Length: 253
Image 1 (cartoon, one colour):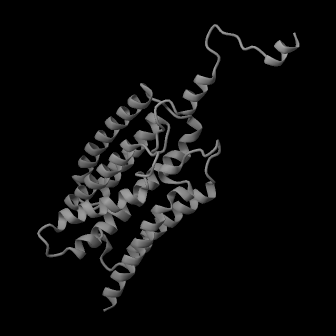
Image 2 (tube, rainbow, N blue to C red; image 1 turned 120 degrees about the horizontal axis):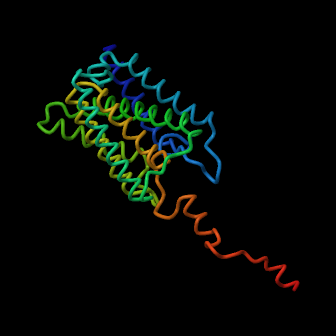
Image 3 (cartoon, helix red, strand yellow; image 1 turned 30 degrees about the vertical axis):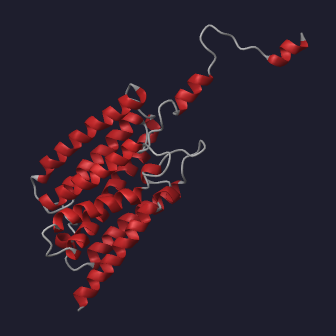
């Protein structure tokens, strides 16, 4: 009876963590760790999102009687490291492809932005994997137990909820990043069940996120072609060989 109650408490915590992911934009975290109107999101608000996310995962470990096994909140098999490196390699390759598509070059970010941005990418990957590929996947498997399609339904189900929670399908968002989030959800779910833990999925996800940041300079939302800051400034700049004319001075003459 007590264990059943703890399982329900774990489910409640999981749903709260899904709601927290939905609010990442409000906190300026995850894909939304981007300057808004020239200003960075509040450090305290971002820090609050990370603390609530990591704290919620720790609470899950304490609340659920078998969180390590049933919710995959453990590293998993040792060979999962090799799988993680393979997934990370694919993540790096696609990050380079994104940068080449948007900028025809690798757009390295300012060195000053590295500490905060890298912490954001790694913590976001951990929270995402623990909540979606860990807890939510585990509860999907529990709900579909006995079905011959249990594994497929669970992997697809948590991936769909994850994509919706990131809000990457909203108008104006980069469609490639929506596809990337879908791939991370599906492949991460498969890797978690295969290895018995979120370790491989987390490492692959973290490497992918860091690679996207390092090659594009963005947390996960590269703007449309020609819409980045330097592209706008380049269009506003006086063409080479031309000289700017002060209109008021010209009228005085």
